[in-house]
Image (cartoon, rainbow, N blue to C red):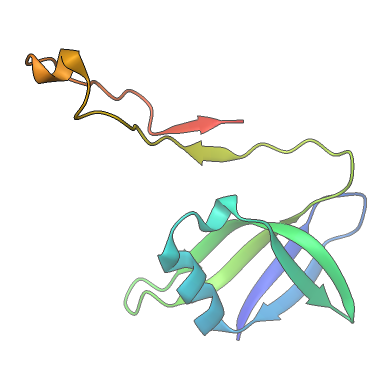
Length: 108
């Protein structure tokens, strides 16, 4: 089990334990910190957003995870990855132009 903490909202911090295999699988899938997860603690389901995963430097297994509680009406910040479509169809790139990507994520 991986220890973790759920913080945010108007409630106190809550300490949880999560199966490390689930965390490792979701973390390797990509976009882990941008997906809303339903976490059940003490029989109560709550929506959370994974914020940080600490990995063991040798085995790359997760050793700690942080979740931010999502409360109704509360504003949060999320980094959204940017993907470009139609690069090959672009007339400018076909003529030798270069697409210069300055930001790979946008904070919303």
